[in-house]
Image 1 (spheres, helix red, strand yellow):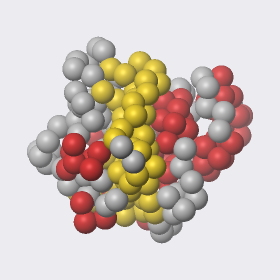
Image 2: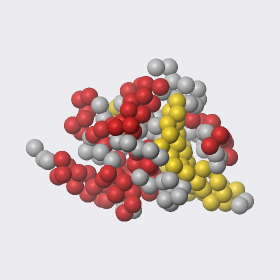
Image 3: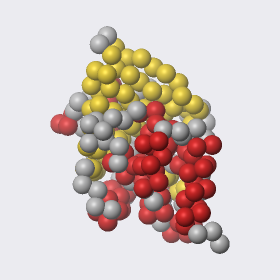
Image 4: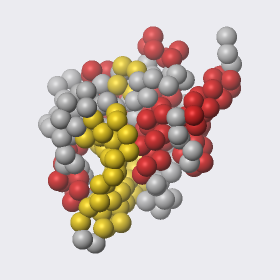
Length: 213
């Protein structure tokens, strides 16, 4: 049986081998124990580079994809970040090590209650979590330096684009079906938006309204 330290080393090695090379991102992921966010009989697979099921029919993303998305955001220490799709809370906890303030929203109350409990146990003080329809963002906290969306839309949602500062970056999966999705980075400049493709991915769809749970 591998010790936790050995599992953690293998975990970080897997991240690097998949292209997660940003030192700040790797440090944040080393500090954030994925096992705390995986419940039940999947908890012994927390250090494997694979997505795992969580409540409400959702998943906790593959760590290498979490790392690549976080890296693509290029978060600066003074940034205010919005995450749409809290899920297990794993991604938000990582963001909290990199940004000044993190706001995270999820449409499922059950997931939000579980995530909040973990945030409290970790004593994360720069993170605020809301149960809300994330497709509308958080207008009362806008604008944001960075926005991360962890569910796939056909196109970047207009309300989220509107809440991005000039010079800000949004990273999200886009695609019309479960099978063909692309992770993209959107940068807002003085005249509009620049779009850049990063890699193919698979995410649950971004749905409007609150979850029935």
